[in-house]
Image 1 (cartoon, helix red, strand yellow):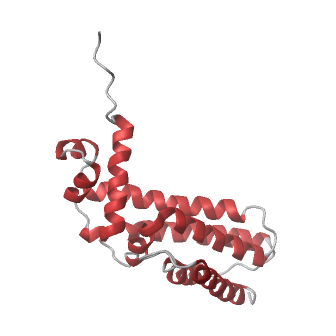
Image 2 (cartoon, one colour; image 1 turned 120 degrees about the vertical axis):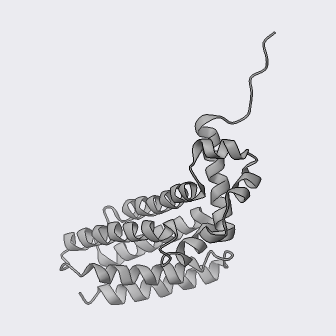
Image 3 (cartoon, rainbow, N blue to C red; image 1 turned 60 degrees about the vertical axis):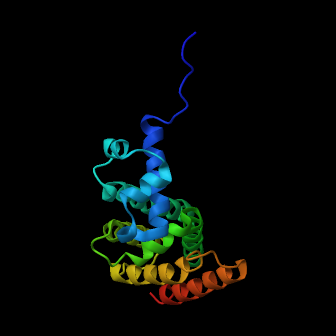
Length: 197
């Protein structure tokens, strides 16, 4: 009889196991508090195995933070596609952010906290996604007959969404009532700002 097939993860499955552990470490400790040792303890893999897939912890964290930002862009684009009025676009974009935050869970905390930290991958990825979202909103609103705007306007409004929205999920998820309250405040600010352009 042959040896039974191994059920241990290998290849891409093992790589994803390590990335899942990196996500947990990052959510709990942020970029500066995370470490290869933490990732090894969470994943149960050996140090040589980790370094077979990643050069260092930064590479692993860069991947998971990049994925999170890509997911935000994808959800926003999907939600606002086909919406034909300003308020609808605003509400769809807010829905997208809150859906994304639920999917990311506690990772939204360090991602938001580190957007101004040039040492963290969150800073670079945030700059990229803000530029992409500004382009998306500009294209969408111009198609609805709105005049072109300074991209800084969209960046400022995204700050409002991030500042008010991330705290609904971090350091712990707030009540449904509090989440609705934060959504309403964001909506009022965005609609008031964009209605006058």
